[in-house]
Image (cartoon, rainbow, N blue to C red):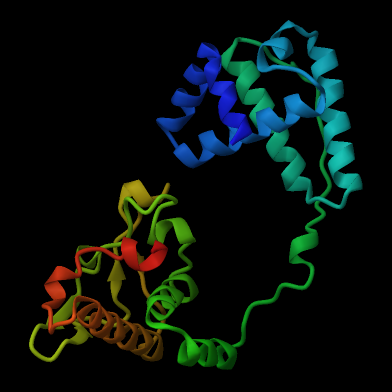
Amino acid sequence: MAHKKLLENPQVKRWYDNLSRKSEVTANVYLRRLGLFCKKWCLTPADLLQKDPQEVHSLLVNTVSDLEGKDYAGSYGKGFVKAVKSWLSFNNMSLGERRINFTDNTPTLREQKLPEPSELRKALEHACPRTRAAMPLSAFCGFRPGALGNHDGTDGLEVRDLPEIQIDRETMKVTFTRVPTMVIVRRSLTKSARPNRLGGGREDCLQKEEAWHLVCFFWSLRLGCSSSPAHLSTLSWLLVS
């Protein structure tokens, strides 16, 4: 991608690597937005450091105004400001007390609504095994997609993260010793790293039991044999492949 060329600048690379140590996703987003900002105003990241703080502030305000004029969410413009400020701060440059205000406009969420229980049940009935395994974790635990599998598929929720699960290797039946059941989210998959309980009642957990039974069955079909569910060590491939 075009913004990757910015990494040819050693200082930009150091800034990017520093961000990546905390979150690679954030580093990529900030790099892309810094690149788009510089392209819009025909600048390089190094040029920004040579400008007066008031001039940089004016460019940021104009950028936010242009984006809102195109009906982008206020949070999108805020993301550009955060990326540019991060780059400036890394180079010991500050905009001082100058403030930039944003609207609370969210055009992509205007028609969004939470599904009714009947609608969710219908979606589960028609979902494929992979989706059926992921949906209860988002619906009943409130997990974001990154907690199920990271952005590049190298890490994700694993069977060992469900400490109360029991898998019968002969019948491929999945049960839980406690309902609602515990789902442990490892530090590498979330910022909070707190254990989460799945659902609030028996029906929620039954949906999860059914999903896991289908996952184990789908896994055996994939291997072409009655493979032991113990081989199902991670959900990463299931969620991103």
